[in-house]
Length: 374
Image 1: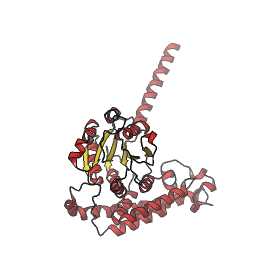
Image 2: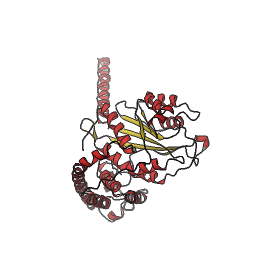
Image 3: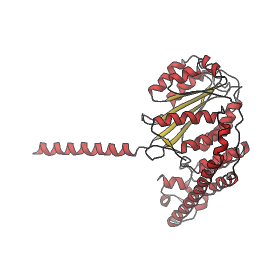
Image 4: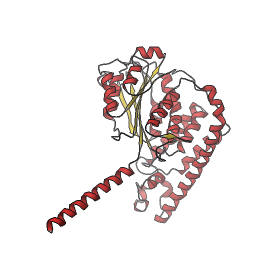
């Protein structure tokens, strides 16, 4: 009888363990991971400028992706290669940012990039990105590398074929973006890199000026994007600097043109724009802090001296205000999309970075059962 009881206990434990594993797996959030590898050698200023100006448009597209009705988490990493200011022993490759959900930081680092002549080793930078980044092990997640440049893909001591094949074995798609003539990109192995990487070979004109289609909603959207900042409550050691980063990226976007400012404002109203590491509202939503247990010195300046009840009410007030502003931006954004739909056709076929990335993302996301809806 004792052996039977022990056996039943073991069976029960196994069943509970399996149910727990199923529960964890069911709750696991889908992610879209994208590593951007940019050639920052002397001839690539146009590419960097396009990356700065089109980041938020790409984010907005990805923010509309859903799988089984759920929105995935977007993670972006950034590398540069081919820049003489980086170490030759590292193949002139530098990881700028690992995979992160902090989109303001991605923007900040893009605006810091400068060009400086060098050796462009595509095999090296792909190898580093595949090995160094914390890629998801879930085969159903969308994992992509976008590498852009204009020198032969085969340069350097690291064989690009080996690097790309290693990427594919981990379920990471390699898309290549050649800045120049399509035939030249084929002759210099950029297409071969994409073919081996199960990705897309794309050519762009890095010096193409992206046409700005002005819409009646633009000024109001940009204004509301600025108003959103008042709902962010900076806390902790990183809070103040992160809030300044947010404001600086607003300014950077506005300096390029109104279109970029509008796209950034729309992105800030999306589910992909999360700042739970420094913003009290997001941190409470993500259950990363308990405001009733925090010391007064740890609170945002706006909340210092408040008791537990007052803290909760203030965070809820800011959350409500943010939600209302985001809803207004979303409504205006939908109206804007309808307004420019007819004009967009006139700019179809532009060989620009955003069009290259968006086309590849949609195609590859669809294969992973994502759908896109604004």
